[in-house]
Length: 76
Image 1 (cartoon, rainbow, N blue to C red):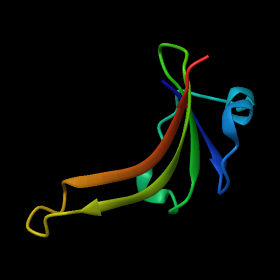
Image 2: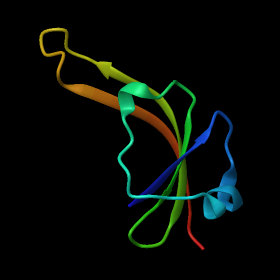
Image 3: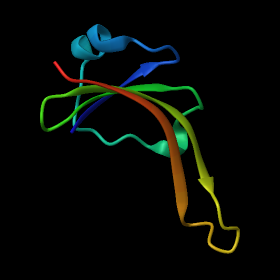
């Protein structure tokens, strides 16, 4: 999977297709809520998601985190 952080506004299919995608990992603990990320899947599909948050749901187990995103995937 290839990824690119694209900023605080959606860039859509064209923007994600033109983005400089890389295999580099993204540190979730450094992302701000509302950051947009473009993705290219192994099947060649383009997707875009916004980072909504990273939460510890269980205070007794703070090392288990839940990632919330809003995504959009295109099939062309």
